[in-house]
Image (cartoon, rainbow, N blue to C red; front, side, top):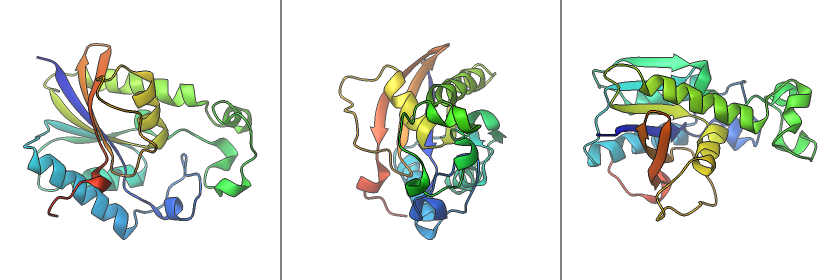
Length: 197
């Protein structure tokens, strides 16, 4: 039987509202962001999904999202820098409008950050390492926009899953994992779903 990992993008933050690049800087969840995390929890409850472990990026917005999703669960919870957002170097925390135009996939490497590929590969390697651990059969992983969207576009997915226009806060990616092989089998924008909170 293949293992399952559910990757969730953290809830909305103050910097999201202010249209700022967060990167490795941080800002707190908004009330809407907390509600988004609770909606993710409602989705998992509605579908009878139970985790044996939970992981989050070591940035506070991801940790807080994980804690809201797993409140009351008797499972081990961990944080790891491997699930962090892409570093934008000196533009971490900068307003989007203040970032020069150019090849965003590689530009931030020149200002002390990462390329998109580096951030995505880092997240992928972290996930593979996590899922190789004993008793990791169904795992929650809370990460960020670039890793979430990058994994979606880089890895195989079920042919019924269309490329979304965006990856909203609180979106859920359900992966089947067998060693180094990861396949996306379901993608959920919880903002479109109606669940009792």
